[in-house]
Structures are given as C-alpha cells and as structure tokens.
Length: 322
Image (cartoon, one colour):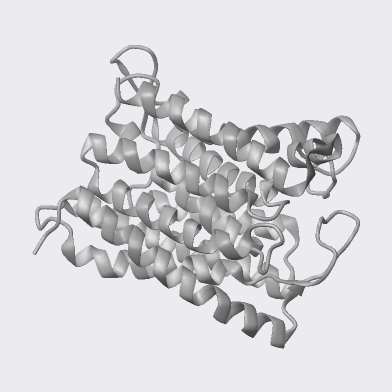
C-alpha cells in the first residue's frame, strides 16, 4: 500500500517526533550517568554541565521515520530516487558518527573538515549533486563534472558547519532547522516531490520532538553529532528537493531559507580572518551573542532569531510557489 506525499509526510513527521521525544529523556539520563556532558567555559552560555548526546535522539527519530515510511512510498519510484534515499540515509549516518566521535573524544578541526568533504563527495555517487543552476529565466546552466563536484561539496560542507556554528544558544540550531525543514516540506509537497517531502518531514518532526528538551534552560545539547547531522540533511534536501524543478531563483531560494546560519558563518570567517585569528577558533561575537549583549537575554535572542528565520522562510515559500 502506498501513501500520497501528504500522508507519507505526516506519518514521517509523527514517527520522527515520537521517537525523538521518547529517546531524549533516555539519553539525558544515560549521558548524565556516564559523564558525557558539556562543561561551562568563557565561550559558552550555560552555567552547569549539560549532556551532549542529543544528536542521538535526533538521528534515531530521522532514521526510524525513513525506515517506517519507505515501504509506503509509491511503487513507481525511479531507481534514482531510491538511490537518493539510500545515499542521504548513509550520509546522515556518517555525519552523525563523525559528530558523535567529536563529542566523545574530540577531533581536530582539519580532520573533521576532511571527513565532511568525504561525506559530501560520497553523496555525489548516489545522485546528491548540484548538476545545474538557473537564474531569473527558465534557462538552465548545466555544470561540467568538476564544477558539480566543487559546488556540491562546498554547499554541503558549508551547511554542516553553518548549523554547527549557530548552535551557540539553547534551542537555536534546532529551531532554525525546524523552520527550514518546514519551508522545504511545503515546497516539496507543492512540487509533488515525495522523497524530499518525506525527508523534510522527518527533520521537522525530530527537531520539534527535541526542542522541548533543548530550549532554554536546555536539559540536553545537540552536540556536533546533532548539528552536523541536521546541516547535512538540510543541505541534501535542498539539493534533491523542489528546487530541481523550480524554474526561477533556484539558487536564491535555499540560500534565503538558510540565510541566517549562512550569514552568521560567513561573518564569523570574515571577522576572524580580519582579526588575524584562525577561522575555527570559537568566540562570543556571533549574531546571537551580539543580540544577547544588547539586553534581549537568552530566550529573547533565540525567539527573535526564530522570527527572522521564519520570515525569510515564508518569503522563500511565497516566491517558490509563484
């Protein structure tokens, strides 16, 4: 029995939500007992140790959702669509493992970057690639193989690190990911892109299921396992989703939806470069830090940034549906 894109997406979101909501308190207890916590420091907002294995709950929700819902997808899925689901599931698993290893043992930034590049490159073999671009007209610019590889790897790695870097306040990265996934879901359903809709709903459901435990004061953090996972999934969905069939502004729409984390990351790189510092060194000058220093407080800052991300997502959806 197959389900329509709408019902399949609803099922995917519900499964991801329930699994993540159930797993989160279990992981909180486990991480606390094992001492897998993020300790306070000058670059961090929290004042006491907080469990850091939240990415495990998000990963469980997303993967469970995909496995439960995949049998209900239409039987006429092309082999390319099946490979894409397999490729994204594999890439998500590897992204989670890389982040989990970093959470548990620590990874040098250079090695983590190399692993991210390999994950992005591996996805190309499954059809997760930027093969063409389009601008304001209906004409497509097809990219040569080398450009496809470069554009794809750059986009995936950029999003993985953007979500990772914006994860500096309780609930911020999770909420931004949920808003972006919601926008992708709407556009995917309008375009009849069932695979993209399924994956978007999975990310949305897992993020919403996790945010109760992650919002200030957080009971658990995403950790690199969660932020790299969400970044990879959002990047992949934006590549294989509705923007492949939208004939106008295909470059601008995913950038608009994810503008907040992308801007924060670009500004951080520029700021650290001009200051003569290493770009991977942490600081307290991100957008969310600056807003908090203006007196908005922790929750106020996060809610304001949710609002900005929501407005950008709504604008992108309106443009994409025209």
